Image 1: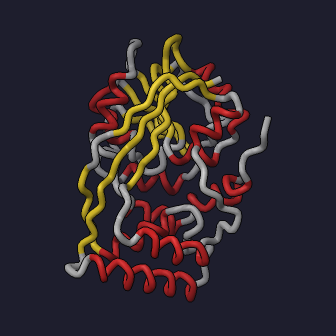
Image 2: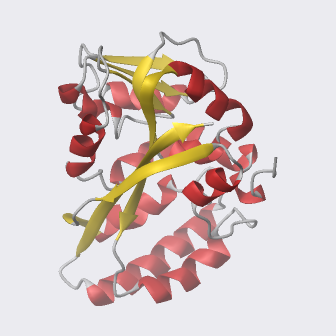
Length: 260
């Protein structure tokens, strides 16, 4: 099997347990509500049980409980789980938080649906896809969810700021569906893109959201670099958002299929 791209290595995935990343995670846009309607339609077996693999603070798990009988939310970061438990919906009786690596954590199988968002990028694909297949009921799907933001007027200039400050010097643009498909780990059965949803936040919150992303953990940047990055992004975005409010068009893409 082809090795994973270097920029998706475990040393980069480990940053999502950094205290600064967990704290900044609240500033990332939520998935559009349509995502959860799509996921619900993919569940055809009883009981309606879901495994959310790499749940983080529960951007999927906390909002899926209204559609299912139980959600098992797994994450390798105890900090992420603790944060999620304290957020709205984090104490729902149909939500069970499980701390551990997706490759080895003990689970109550089987599941009618497995969901995976950005955390999938950091897992050992050669292990977890085989495990996903074993955990699913016959006819069950793995749904891979990718969050997206439609192009903003400042994107080109922003790219020039991001590149020199990222601590992930190996980063290359990639498509996770393409990566796992070409490794014969995933057989795509369908995909759906949600309608765009308006998401508003202050410029300060928008800037802080970058520190919950790959390569921008405050724990791994120098204070000087982080402050300089923040100031440059603030100055750039303020020219487009003079009222101090950033308006983003957020979409969610759900791709479902069979793990191999």
